[in-house]
Image (tube, rainbow, N blue to C red):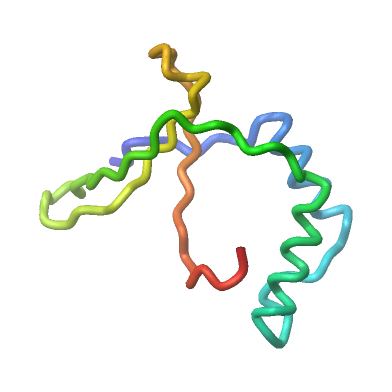
Length: 102
């Protein structure tokens, strides 16, 4: 049994996905070189060039799988604005590449 259920993106996330689709930009894996992919990635990010969020803590943890035999490294980013103990939504990003583009 999974420990979480996938949900539909919220309104703001859905807007970003629709904007990306409407721009009809090429897929990052369609370029001949990593440099070309990086350049396109940076161009794609430009409209969202916002000030970084100040982090109060960045902590690495290891979480065991259901068998307890394997441990996955996770990184917990805690924005300063959420250090008062409030419960906040979480984003789970499962990296599946070689950190080539961005």
